[in-house]
Length: 469
Ligand SMILES: Cc1ncc(COP(=O)(O)O)c(C=O)c1O
Ligand SMILES: N[C@@H](CCOP(=O)(O)O)C(=O)O
Image (cartoon, rainbow, N blue to C red):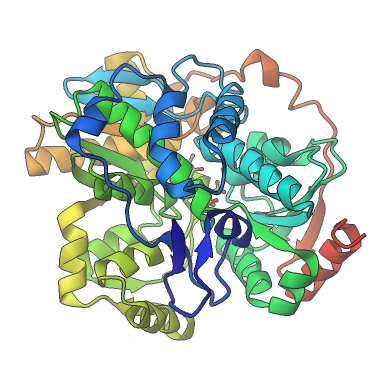
């Protein structure tokens, strides 16, 4: 399988190179040259298999012959042995035709572990085969950072630098990033918001001299392997509700558009998916875009679902590429508009294509708190604020579209214990951390505060990376 950039001006890469590249050299995002196809019979044959077995079937076409099947199988098995639920990502019923897919049984209690545990092993494998090192960079609004640090800590071939917005993540999220004792981990609190952190990461990738000098690699969902690993749970959950003989819908708490884009990919691969609903918080740029056809930035507000406090939703670029029939020139035009004026207008035919696959809705902070309360009262189930935005939007959109005969799967992206203040304020119940994380709030923190400045960030990386030494 080859990978092509959404901006059409970067070299076509094989799987291993695409994984190490992160962002394409033209500033675009890599996508597989074509979508692997699974027939109904092939999907049906996955029934009854374990999560790991389904992962091997779904991921193999993306990897091609670059990693031998027994090696890929071992990496998958090792990645999901870190999860504390036998099903890896279990499905829980909330009500009639309404389910939560619990993606938070990994080591840092968020869905990011699903992809990050595999990505770290894939990168390690490729780097070992090539006898190389890499400098890993990542921007986080809270969850990617902890998951990446957990997955890469102590790995001898990588040094990892995680940029998080200073004072804008939950205390649990911060400590998951700042209490690592591994010498290859560097937690950097940036004076700015998540978009500033993500902007710095992209600036470093677009500086080709620096990028090559430190062998830069990325672990955000700009890296294709992150999306790829997330496709698997769309298959496992749909299969357990009757796919391919019954269609399902998904509602996804959305920020950087990586998780829901994985759902779109599953659909393109043959999974019968009726609607993919984007759930946003007050930072509702994606909901507004679906309504108006115009992507317009308006500034970020801090909410009780901080991981979704995002305006520049990186993976939306992948969808624009798809909706324009993979027209890289159109994508470049939109991205230039975004850079120059903070907005662009999507052509009518393309926004209609997007609306054929996606719906969208928003939840205010009050909606979110109310949903946490009402779900606890009706189902005895305690939601985290991100998942609660999706439960609220699912109720809204399903009531309006009357598609309630189709099972709807809400992606449960985080454990409530990551956001105890918001959850206890909404519900009166304090969600305790699991025993294996009970030391977290007492452990010593170690991080550096930096202004949102490319030069200072580069200096910091150059001081600490072991690439070239
Ligand atoms: C808990 C949680 N839910 C939802 C999201 C949004 O996911 P995505 O950025 O893939 O749209 C994030 C951050 O990415 C998150 O950390
Ligand atoms: N919500 C994310 C933001 C980064 O998203 P990613 O999926 O592109 O890594 C976070 O928790 O950091």
